[in-house]
Image (cartoon, rainbow, N blue to C red):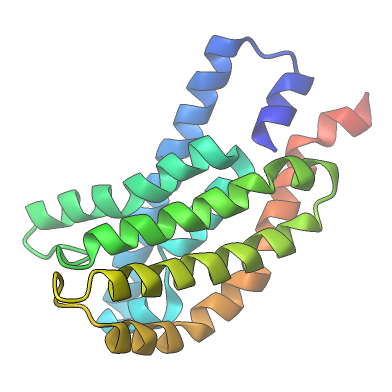
Length: 194
């Protein structure tokens, strides 16, 4: 969607990369900050319930497409882990980090695959987010099940986390598409004005 908006404005390739890098960095920063805010207000259980890091990642895929969204999905938990480890309280925990990177990569990749459709019709944002949530959570559960015996996480524990996160998924299933629809209207506004 962002690519289409930049192309409409005939932005040069080098500037497109710069803009996408800035947007990606902003989304990663948001993905690091939101969990900190939620944990500060609601404690660690709030993070598992409301899944704050997922929101910017889902937006990133819808907005930036599969490749750039994938980078946001992979880098968000990694950057969060590195920054919070330096402060003495790693989030996500080291044992969960590779699984969360894979899960958020799936979230971003799936929403990113819908990006061009969203540029044409904003309502595709709903399908994009729902498909990403289903695929991402299934990937998390599946990868943990495949890694049984090599990780302290168990499929039963992950299933419990998935169930705890249903409220967050529900809110994001509505909120993210509405945000994406609003961003689309802003990005493609000049097109209507021409």
